Amino acid sequence: MPARIVHSGTRPSTAQTAGLALFLLTCLNLFNFIDRYVLPGVQPLVQKEFSANDAQMGLLTTAFFFTYMIVAPLTGWLGDRYPRRPLIVAGTLLWSAAMLFTATVHSYNTLLIRHAIVGIGEATFSIYAPALLADFYPEIDRNRILSIFYITIPVGAALGYLMGGVLGERYGWRMPFFIAALPGVLIAAAFWFFVKEPERGTADELKATLDRTTLSGLRHNPAFWSATLGMAAWTFAVGGISTFLPTFFVRFGGYSVGRAGLLTGAITAVDGLLGTIIGGWIAQRWLRRNHRALYLLSSVSMAFAIPAAALVFFGPRSWLIPGAFIAEFFIFLNTGPLNAAIVNSVAAAIRSTAIAINLFCIHALGDAFSPRLIGRVSDATSSLRMGLGMTLIALAASGVILLVGSRFAPLLPESQDSTALHSKTP
Image (tube, rainbow, N blue to C red; front, side, top):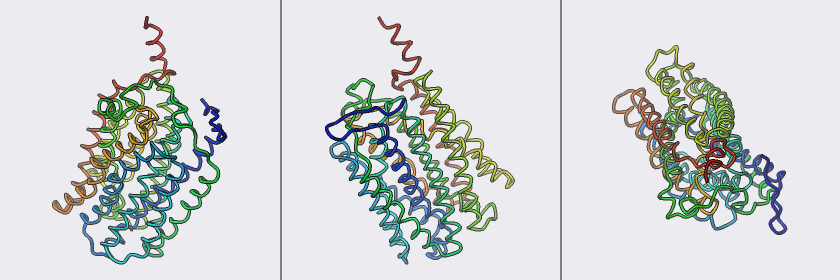
């Protein structure tokens, strides 16, 4: 279903505007994740220069997500009360400036502070962008739209790994941060001048019940909380794996920093593209027959990812690359569906705040501390394998939560099972 044509005063929201907004926000999200993953790509080089242990390197990511989740509730509140376009631009400029300044740091503590500041800028964009896109497209189409938007997670992560590993090895670890800083500024300028913000809630079709439209009601919204808790467990695993996988390839695969970054980037890019596209496609078709599809697909993907990841961490060296390829494919299957489940669980009146609460929870319970914890276990046991093994438990927990939570999925008007149910209602 194409975006609706809605007129609000002198600021029309057309299908063309919706497409342009999707394109520019997707480009911004690409550089959002490139900037986030440059550091893991150069991590062995940074670790060597600053003589930092695994726990200290994990703390860098923890600091990023700590500020990210602390700022999120405030930015969510702002997003439900003020225009989101200037807030998106401001957040982009802040994280781009922090990336540029990274290239000038010469101590671990300064790097820690700088990485924390990046979290403030990204907390704005990650909340406002999906909420804004939801005002262009109805619930049944949001899985498809958010699958496109979030395909930038693996692609951006891959490019970040590649830039960090390859450029860092050749030109020093600071060079990738210089290169990654400028594009976000240019795209943000284009977004400011060419995109008109739609009327809030114009594309919503589901009934505006109390649990979907009020913060007090949100406490009793099982569709939102099951998706959030399932995503939190998933985020714990993904945060730990993404932080330490290049280092794992160096230690247990015998690869150079550049080669490890290239391999991690290639696997993440291919799997991310295939997994996100295929997962979004399967969920979109399944969703028209079963309103629980967004939750069920996410749960099933965890069941297939766990054994493959176990082969990577504890299997023979010959399974290191094939296992990583299979595991990441299934991990990325739920990218669009799970994010669409969050967006569809609430109405426009509280959507930015709900996304902010979701981000706070998934990072507070997930990757805000998983890299640090994995690093501490690695240091204590002298085995990075044992640290990364905790991600298998997290993936299992995610699958179970989402399977149970599927019973609370909202009935979408276009789903066949929803239509059949309503047709039998007297």
